[in-house]
Length: 120
Image (tube, rainbow, N blue to C red; front, side):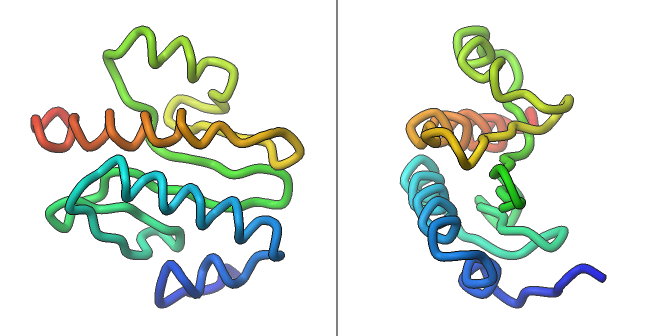
């Protein structure tokens, strides 16, 4: 049965220390990339919000971190994301490799742009 988390802090605290560090940095980068953002738990995982609506989700797993959804329409960004695509709307970042935090920030910024323009 899936756990129910009341807050992003509670969600992150449920992981081993080394994964907590990665999740906290992803959280920090997403907030930095989305000025005025909030956060909540949605679908059981951390969600960065803008105006109360989702912008980007992230989740910890046993061997990777996932970020959802994948931004549309930016070909250079899509090329950078290609090695991390796991499914149509999912990016997977293996925990045994360096996490590309700057790239995750770009994803959050692009998704916030889509949210602000009404395309997402």
